[in-house]
Image (cartoon, rainbow, N blue to C red):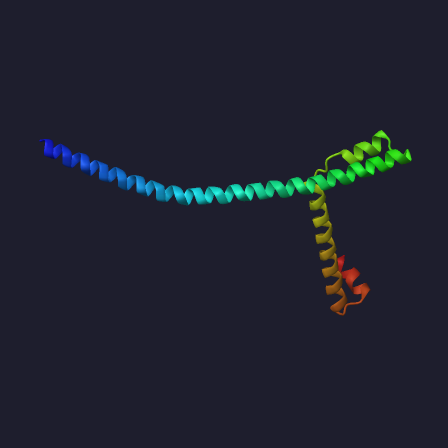
Length: 126
């Protein structure tokens, strides 16, 4: 009976050792992926920080110059320090305007190259 227990304990130790080896191999892959993600995040953070500092410095310099010249008031200071926000609607209106111009151009070109006179086009539209 003790031999059976010893065999079972050896088998369990071997399976445990195999599982630990597999876990180590898998964890190496995950560690590499995690390190790559962390490095990417740090680079992105550094780039964003560096570009924001330049904008802040330029704004501060502009504020200093305006203050020296005596032209700085609350309205100008608010406009210069106000964070810029983007919106969906201006780009949508620009796209609709471009679409309208393209449709008008197509209609004018089709009428122009069809050989119809302007009087025939007016009568045709009625």
